[in-house]
Length: 180
Image (cartoon, rainbow, N blue to C red):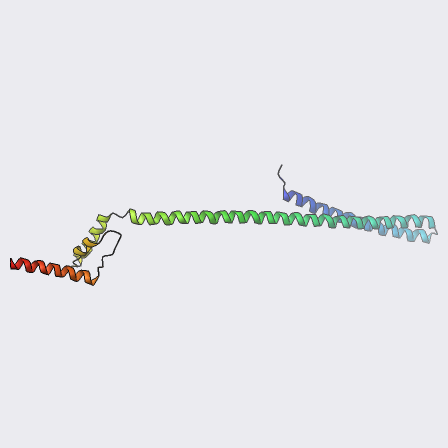
């Protein structure tokens, strides 16, 4: 059987209230006995006054005992309430830690999937066809540079030295063709 803190807490608070009521009732009976002491003294009934005085003192002690018990039960109630709050906070923290761990894993999976998707799902022939189309629409000569580029390893931009060497080779070939 599982411990139910709410039921226990309710019972403790109810018991505290009940003990406080008993204490007040004892206090009222104490005062009633004191009134009887006064009346017995006025009637010169000293034996009766003595009995009423004993009753009054007993009721006073009884009321104080009920208050002490109420105080102790209230202290236990506070401890139970604190324990319940700590248990609830602990459970909440465990849920948050689990959520953060799940989010970290999801983020890593998503980043990995997105990285793979962008590199693996783009057909290289479509990329080259689009570049060719844009180049033709804008009158750009780029096919010779595009052939030198390996997919995913370098960019379309070539260094000036490489371009000059290619142009020089082309000119040398033309000159050799004219001579022959």
